[in-house]
Image (cartoon, protein in one colour):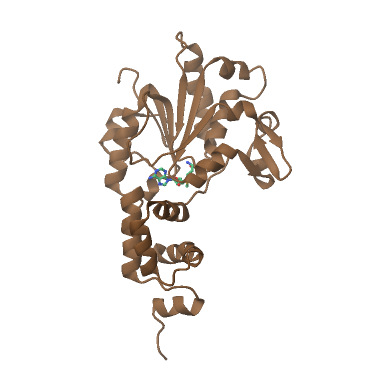
Length: 289
Ligand SMILES: C[S@@+](CC[C@H](N)C(=O)[O-])C[C@H]1O[C@@H](n2cnc3c(N)ncnc32)[C@H](O)[C@@H]1O
């Protein structure tokens, strides 16, 4: 019996086949645009996520699609949206929010100056991370919220995906996600809507969302008291990780905290400038600018 090649198998499923060379070209373009590394075992994922786009554009082959993304920047952005993994949830890796609440907030509360408290969710996906930060800062009762109300808290959410940035701005989520938010935060800082729930205006108003590729020039003219860069480093190679770590450390204010994802660690020389302070958490020394 004849063996089916991967390309024959693809043809039997319907839709255009994706050759190894075409996969490598798409991977190279994604790396060039977003620095995301696609290992060869992702070929099926790439084919299935992009096939719909080929149909929408009336393209017959991946060769035609590659020619299109080469010449069309908007189409490349669509490709990034389709190929990035946006999985996230509220209060993900709760120990980071405990640290924020128990170790960082008291420092900010005690500050004499009225400097803003700025926190960056740097691969925010659809916003669950930044709204968890907002709810943590606002606290568990209305009395506690007085501090965030008076403190000039500024939360920034950025993501490479324009669709994700739009989701942060909408701040609306399906009912099935409501239980990810423990009481009393859920009761205080969310509101039921017809289809699910929305983040309350007081939490939403703390947040500014914008599109940003972590490897482009950053627009910041200030440093951050805390940066969340979680569950995105895993998509980058060692060189990209090292470059990003150095830039993140430089963007932290003295004493600032850096939070990384559960399977991520600082891997570069940048970690010499930071003090580990728990699982996937680091602080910049107070005396380092
Ligand atoms: C798995 S989600 C992580 C969401 C959230 N930080 C968390 O931990 O729950 C990864 C996000 O990183 C974004 N991303 C991937 N490459 C990026 C890049 N080069 N610059 C900015 N964001 C990027 C993706 O669009 C995606 O929304």
